[in-house]
Length: 203
Image 1: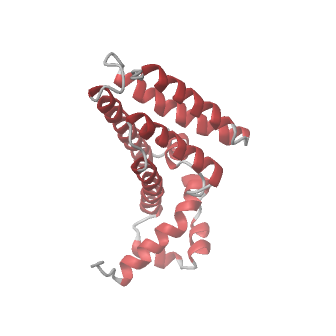
Image 2: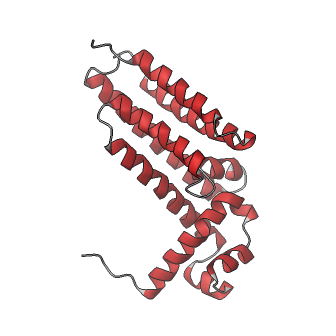
């Protein structure tokens, strides 16, 4: 049975969901209080009655956007059987995000990391944690693939996992800057090539 949310919790959730796309598109510095009040239809007092300040709204919005991406990744990985397919599902999710524009603004990790690198320590830490979790998940899939005989045992798991993260994030950045969604296809093929090189041929 689903737990019923209080009015305050519903309002807080509404603010997060409504402003998440704005923060992810315009960034922390570019998002004004006016943006938040216009999007939600709430007053400044209503927003700050539920959040201590803009920082708290931005951090909650980042978590919301990241959860959307994680859900997409989980759904696509659930359809895959091998570690290779699961890793490619990971990459393909970001291709879908680039093409669909959902979540609004694209990858929240890249957007936040670029803006908050030297300007917002809390958001930077959020992005860093997300990248480390992402790398750990890829590393776990690589180790599982080695254990079940799918990948070569001499595979450098740490090097490859962080390299895949870098390829995907770099591909997203290039795609956004050039406004050419097809650029990400080259990243997809590169990851596919790298993974094929560590696969053990069982034929």
